Length: 175
Image (cartoon, rainbow, N blue to C red; front, side):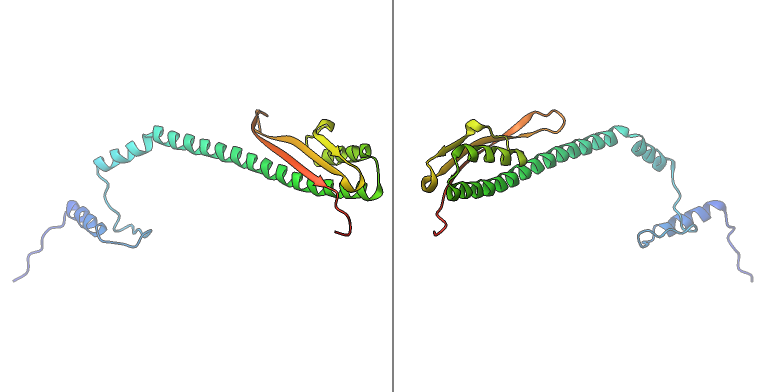
């Protein structure tokens, strides 16, 4: 007796491939023999995803807004750091100038001029009215007050005001 073989049809082969694709495979591996059969319902779902441009545009717009906000914030932080470091260097320069004028008994008019020149070199927005000089030689003291502004990059409009007040006194070289 010979065994009877079941005739093989095309639909049986498709079912076999679909059942093979249901097996768990490592991510990223795909074999031509076990590729899944895509139905019409699955194709229409993929078309919905690719044609839903509104969601993608909304995501890109939000991403662009975050990028613009980040650039503005970074620009303002860089300005703030620059202003603070220039102020620190200017204060060291003022202390040195006060010591120099106090030890050499120079007139206070020279000190005011020297401080204005140094302020200009550090891009410090200070005027002659903002510098108060009291005393001479051993009792020399200088008071400084000025404001610096942080601005938006494109609009050049100030968004934050930084106020600086400094008191510098002459110290005898012995102390």
